[in-house]
Length: 340
Ligand code: SF4
Image (cartoon, rainbow, N blue to C red; front, side):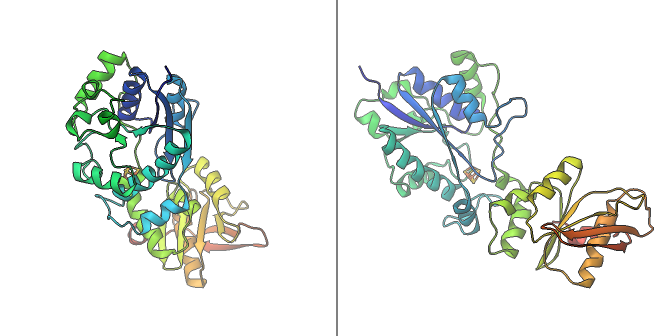
């Protein structure tokens, strides 16, 4: 008999991992769908493959599609219809966007339904019962989203009503504790690793959310590259038109230089001086006074000059002449006032 096709949202975390194993055990032909965005923290350093969902799909022997949400996701973060969670995480709108895309893929692949690793009551914003119903409805998926880990607590879905899924094979996990999931992983699937939740989303991090808010407030055209830059370095907001990003180590210096736009200015200690220090990028426009402040910030992170003025060279990233300024290091109080 031909297997029924199902499309699973696979983040790579424990819950979606378990939901996928449950559906595979029931004999469904599963395709995994993974979403990434500039805010994903879904990598594991101990694996060669950077995308945990891909690695997991390989392990489970199922095909996986990875979809990147770029500018449209940034637009959503700027103005979410259903508001934010604790920080800048627009979870309800984010899930609606993901589910809408999943619906397209479901239809494209001939899957009978989608399934997720969601657990009722686990996340305050998007995994409450009323929010789950709203998300399914707005995505046009009412009755077609199976949540194997909590299905027994939810209204029967269309696949259950049609007998494609036996409700008794579903689970009744709820709440924030992960004890039930860990037991399931160990006892029923003999899993000994990857028993923690997925890396998560930078928008739920208060510090990152603050940087993101600053970006959205000051740059109406902010794009994916700008959002990615928020993960690197120390950030200082000098004025509405100017932000400085200072590398924290050599690796970041290199990344910052590569990510700088041709119109950005790059600052670093003058090679001819004995001073050593980070690479910094100025994004925006600046005048003479701002230039002195930029120099002071860069000098603050240089070694070798003490409180004496440091020679700082700067040039446009895209090429052209370079100039040198002498700058005394900024004080901690000044840095604190600009730090984002
Ligand atoms: S935590 Fe981030 S990725 Fe997850 S639903 Fe919320 S906004 Fe989307």
